[in-house]
Length: 167
Image 1 (tube, one colour):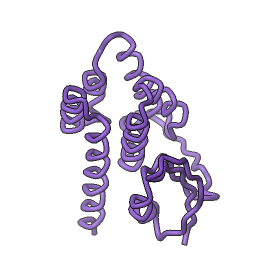
Image 2: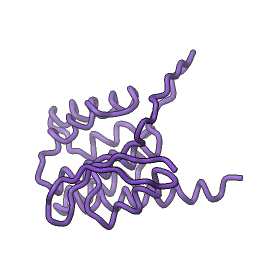
Image 3: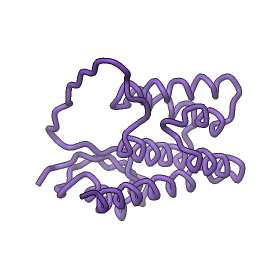
């Protein structure tokens, strides 16, 4: 079984960095959820894949990457980190260049005075209408961190359903 390195904030508000053995990344995430707020998780010793493509680039982000983005953003917002600082940090650590570019574009729009939800809505290939509308509701209600947690959970569940339906 693979070993995953993780970073989380436990219920005592302490940052914990350790490893866990699990069948896959999603199993590890589900196991760690009870221990606190997960910030980051990576397979230990996993080699970064090199990929080359010719022609049109694929836009958007992988579901797994979007789930982790949402979960990390939720943890940072819950901890009181300003949204722009959170996004800048996450842009630096984004796995794919396309997703990094999307986050940087969102940052520029927010710096230009746009709301977070409006900035996300300019990237429908990554953030669907449900995601954008829930973020807008979270901003309006002052519960963005809770909404982001719900979004991450919803994305994980929908990802699991797709995997179960696939032949």
